[in-house]
Image (cartoon, rainbow, N blue to C red; front, side):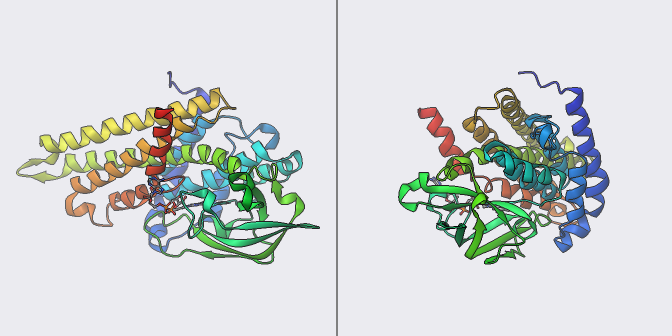
Length: 382
Ligand SMILES: Cc1cc2nc3c(=O)[nH]c(=O)nc-3n(C[C@H](O)[C@H](O)[C@H](O)COP(=O)(O)OP(=O)(O)OC[C@H]3O[C@@H](n4cnc5c(N)ncnc54)[C@H](O)[C@@H]3O)c2cc1C
């Protein structure tokens, strides 16, 4: 498989690299300390076209594709991983899923606005007792004469309390199992009975907001239903195939940053009268990080390139292989970087502690590493 990037992809990568260096890097310390989310930055990302790659031109997209989207997410995450999340919260989650499953009116009403940053988005499946086992969710949507009434709660929803509109998955016919789940486009700012609460403290991704939300007889209109009644589980799984890829791309970005930080430090740090880079054990650690990073990059690019080549295929297992390997190697690289930097790795003066905190999220979000292994094993045994 040939990964010579096209001129367009190189331009996208360079734009993302410049944005990350010029916009994100200068404020990292302040933002991390204050757990600061910057709405204007999301809008700037939108203006730069970051949320249009997998969206058709008629809905405001650029049609550059999944490979372009992945290399942009990688570039941004290599500087500050929190800012990789809006790719999913604006584009791969809401916009792309509405483009794929929404009716024409929904596509016209929402997709362009997620892409342009006019609407902030989110997607909500996780609940307090529902993570990996999506089918076990408790949230319900009951049909009435003039709409639907949502009851239940969601948690760990990225961008939940800043979202204008988001996708909410709920049971419309619980007795039908997975075929009784439906997907809704919900107005997060104007739905009585819907409240959102920020999750203030978390382990990493400090500048990417995360929320809980509660639906108490929350009335939404009839046309909030996206796709057929009962198609929600399939829609959700298809959405995850795409959001998962972007998460894997972010993991590649963080792993690359760990290598750069480790190499730079190892060249400068003198112990026993020589730079620690001259010690074979340090070289071995760097070599393993390097090989893992190269391998995850290739897996992510392959999955992305194939998504561009076969837009109607889900490519679930290829995406899971990429996500599993990239997430695990990002954590391994961050952990190794912490070791190479010794006590300075443990200091907030250096970024590697942040790399580790942020990398840990990749093993959890969009399906844990175990869940990726379940998918991969299912494919292997098929
Ligand atoms: C920063 C962050 C942002 C998030 N953003 C969103 C969002 O925007 N929208 C959203 O809906 N959710 C979001 N989530 C939630 C995330 O998707 C879930 O946390 C994830 O799916 C795992 O669910 P869980 O935490 O409930 O773990 P559980 O499913 O309870 O898993 C606990 C452990 O059991 C293991 N396990 C579970 N089932 C199996 C199995 N069959 N075989 C082997 N092992 C198994 C898991 O691998 C894990 O190690 C976010 C989470 C975080 C941390």
